[in-house]
Image 1: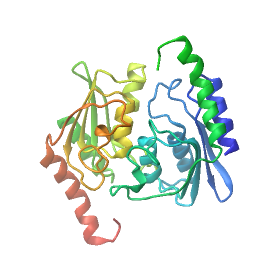
Image 2 (image 1 turned 90 degrees about the horizontal axis):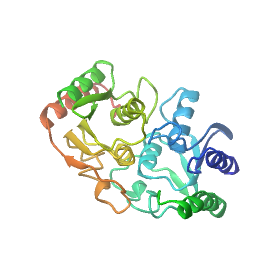
Image 3 (image 1 turned 180 degrees about the vertical axis):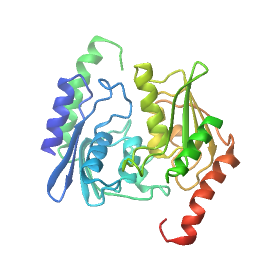
Length: 148
Length: 148
């Protein structure tokens, strides 16, 4: 999770919403990514999606059955769907996201009947550190402009 | 929708689940794609995701506010999330997907409180043609092996 937080910090330095993700396979990191939605002008370029795609390329397979995903924020609906499609074994995430999260909030996708693969979920790991990064990122924007 | 069906047919020819998507902006097609999950070994390479990414690159913007997405199958959770993130104006889709769909089935994401942008939705357009393509694709596989 420390590596995922490091990715999130890099995102913030580049003006991206600070969320980082790391994929681990057999005790080794095989993919790391942070949000790139702004710089790539790609609304699908969330940290989780980028890490999943990178890991699949590295392992040369479309499924990540023995992989664990560490991410600093509760995944949204899009990313929860991708995690399920990729057959990720375990999801470990940091801050809760009551507004946009889809694991322990909203549609709780992994608990729904149309979810064909449910990863094991561990929530709230490094929650404070993950959340503080997001708060620090959004606070000055909220004070200076009505952007969000 | 005929162009999306043509994309779906191409997917089937290449051994991919036959789903096609087309994005329209100001009465012009700006992106077309079909499923490439098998050949790219990428579980996120659904037709909708690929079309959204292509359209954003073409328009040089991360939001598709005046764009309409035609897709032959009801989008899954991952794609419904992406459609919302991309601010797609209107979603027109073909076959219903009670098992994996997330628009009129499952979590009905666009009707949920954590959905920040809801496209207008028109369902069941060319439903029979879209569904027949999928049935024809899966039928021989079901008869010959226990793959699905």
